Image 1 (cartoon, rainbow, N blue to C red):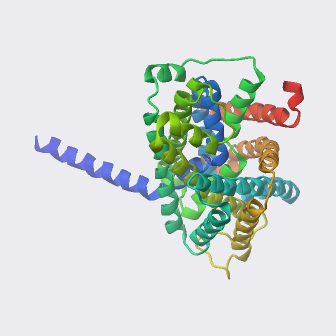
Image 2 (tube, rainbow, N blue to C red):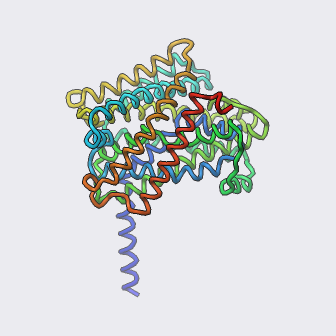
Length: 424
């Protein structure tokens, strides 16, 4: 009996130790995945629920696995090599290809950062606050957060941002959906030979897996100091992050499907969704949806410029890191500052064609994502770079299939964006 008790106590201590290590490495996976639930992402999920009801929940379920596979590869490369993705691309494929990738990434991320400040403006306008007040305050907040902070402090704030996403869970519950139908829709694929359905399905994938995520996640793993011997815990955290972000997306779709779709209400943005929810699900759902939009926009407005700064500095061999000062990393902090200033300034201009801005971002990201995925798969299967941590046969099959599916869907998204008449 005493031996059993000792064994039990030993297992408890081991579990506590494992939990402590998991909490110590937690951050990059969860933060990166949740930052993708930005203003554009929330709008896409809300429109999916309003337009198709619960009909796309099965696709979201599948996308979760795609996201987990791609994110895991980025995290593993960072832990094993101690280098960011842009750094590895430059070493493996040369400066010219790296320069083209960085140029496309800067254009895509700058336009998306601008859209995030538009999300801040839209969210605060729901509370009666002018964009000429909300946008400058938001810009100052995200700038001070990163430039005046350090990695640990910034990571804690980002993790708090992640918790605020639970407001969408509450909104979904308040909408009182038919849970039996919801659960059935998750495992019952449905298809429509309809251009709007196809475009929305493609957009659902395109808004979940983006080029900047891979750069930011890998750089975050490196900046946090995660190495191969602790990578198992980071892998668990990355998978949890993918699960959590689509868990939030699930409730956004449920909230809008249970209210807007059932009443035949069409929307074009996340702010439209919040306004439409008010008479149908009450003030609490409206407020929680608006708070979630503000939180998502602030988080993404912080992380997108950060992702760009990491990638560009790694690509050209400049110092980078949130623990660095202006003397050590002027290019890193300068790029971050420039993105914040330009993104906020554009939204402050009267009559900005936000749809055009988001269209440019979507188009450039669509061009860049397949290239980045191919680079990642070639690097992660290179034994000179990854050693024993290359993809195994089974995981490699899954990864190539996932990347192939993402490439095909991204190509379709790009085609429907650039040539909409062909898909009418």
